Image (cartoon, rainbow, N blue to C red; front, side, top):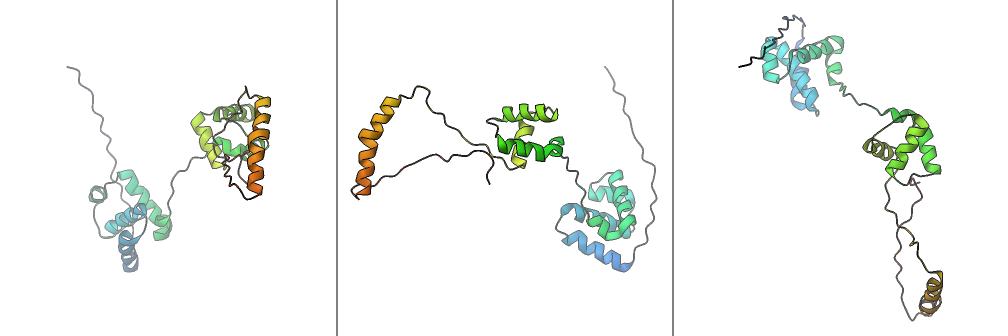
Length: 197
């Protein structure tokens, strides 16, 4: 039977001393129960428990956090108090295509791509950035472009039959409409030539 070795990482006991005033403790207590964001409430609770003298291991257990998270929250409080704990620092990665946003937006406004793959090829050609169709689609939505359904004109349209229809059927009905003898309802698809204004 193969036995897998077990590695255990022991974090050294970190002693971070913070002196809390009663006013700070009351503020931490209020914020841990009333702040609208759950992450901020958690930070406040960690510091409140620290102010109440609980050991770090017990705070980690009660708040379901790792030692590194506990230390980070304590350091934030040391740097800027409750105000620093209220700050949320979520990482929001930004696409490298955003560096070329103005140029691409102008290019797509002048000549809208018919498909995501066409947009993808043009982005690669103009910026040397190779991206997946999903990433390109997200980028296009981000700059305000929408996908539109398109229709095609039949390749085998017969101009003589079309002209006969207009002369024999459409024009007489339009004349009846103008004379108040007929109502006509036309249904046409919405046509778009790129980005909405």
